[in-house]
Image 1 (cartoon, helix red, strand yellow):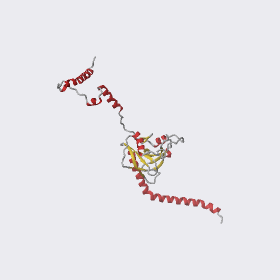
Image 2 (tube, rainbow, N blue to C red):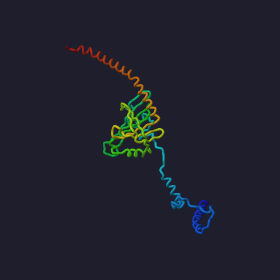
Image 3 (cartoon, one colour):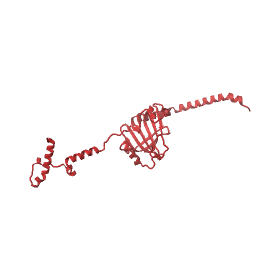
Image 4 (cartoon, rainbow, N blue to C red):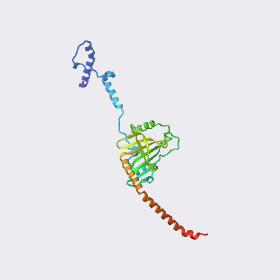
Length: 273
């Protein structure tokens, strides 16, 4: 039995085939009688079924767009607690340094990937990662790449490699602040490229002090809280600095006096002119 769809297709092609003969006899048929092939079919010169297959194959082979996961750098995820990050890095939580204690606890944990002494070219290019925690929650990762493992790479080489994982980069005219216990003051670096969404930000930069690249990864929400807490901690430290200095001097004087009192009887008994 011939389906109605097949019958319709056959009749359409019958009319298309007869159209040139009708035009040759200079007969002016009604507008309903002429079915013109679509421009796309004429250009490709493909039968309808082959044209449909070509279209479907093009749709299937087209790249699919999807949102990149910017909450992670490698296996480390922003928002993870200190205990979990230390375990992933094969470190002890006690190795974290307390930078500020109030109004929030700010801690840092420095991690260096295990190094191999062989000559394999696949050695990890990451030199170290500095994890920063706000009340025990990971909010920043400062990645420093080994200058010898990235030697000769251009800015575009770095952007291309990172974009393959995190998607298309932007090139904002911006700077980022790198703060840690290693710096007397906060350093700023120019952003070479940025990958971000509403929650997270990845910022590639070239160090101003040494020939190496770096990446600053942070949670926008927690970073805002941490920056405010750090600013308040610094303000409190400066405000209380004179009182702390007085207490330090008084304690030092007491320790000196106690040491003299302890040494006096021993030295007096053993002294010979």
